[in-house]
Image: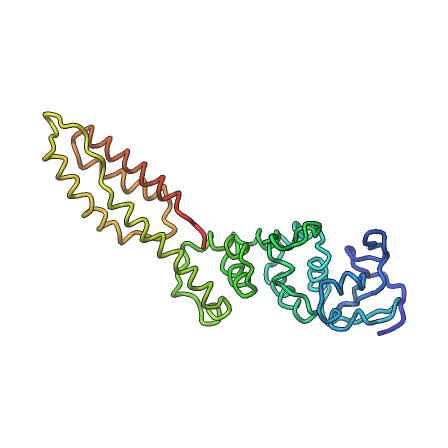
Amino acid sequence: MSPLQVVSNSSPKYAQTNNLNGIPPNLVLKSSDSDLFYVHTHRLNSASTNKFQGHTAATNDSVVDVPENSQILTIILDIIYRNPSAAEDLAPPFPFDILAAAISRLSVYGVDVQAQLNLDRSNVDSTVPTQPVFQALYSHAMTHPLQIYILAAHYNLESLAIAASSHLLGLHITELTDEQAEAMGPVYLRRLMLMQTQREEALKKILLQPPYPHPSTPECDVLNQKTLTIAWPVIAANFAWDIRADLPSTALERILSSLAGYVSCEQCKSSIEEQVARIIIEWESLKVTI
């Protein structure tokens, strides 16, 4: 620590004017790249179990060196202060790796990641504002779904894991590295595998449902329609090789609708089209998250 001096490179977010509910800051943190952060010991202590690694024990008007660069320290403080601007500041194109690195440092300062970032607010004081950094993480789910899912699984951030899982329908589980699987843990790895296999098995069952028969006509009687009813499961079984958890509805509809071209009866064609529409509705209604 060193006596407080006037330095020009103070953090824009946590400047000397950083009052909290009218209370001025009483501690200055200095990052490894010499930026100054004016903070409140009571706010840091409220989120920390070790007095922010002992730094809040410093006397007033002291500058405390913190072994984090200004980017990492800003994110850590954004999480503790629940800074509203973080939702936009840390969203893409902000580098996800830096955001994840900051989160990994929270435990050093006695900050519980699960308590700070979990979106489940059933056991949270309603007066506590929502966590903008969660929203920033959520916004990275589309561009970094696997990394977000691993981070969420590692810290048991249920809501974030669910959000990321919807972008992992097409993930090839066998391509996960040992390090990724270990970081994800057995519980969330199993849930990811179940999400995919359950969707695939559900689609197989949906496809086995043949088109509804239509009233007999001179051109297409019960026997003619029975041929289609028998052939349908065979066609579905052949199609099973193309089934995957992330199969687009448009691709499914295109493949199934082409079957109408193999029958001459217009009513049979209509029955096929109606069945395809029902299949698409059922497919789109299936759960797409863990």
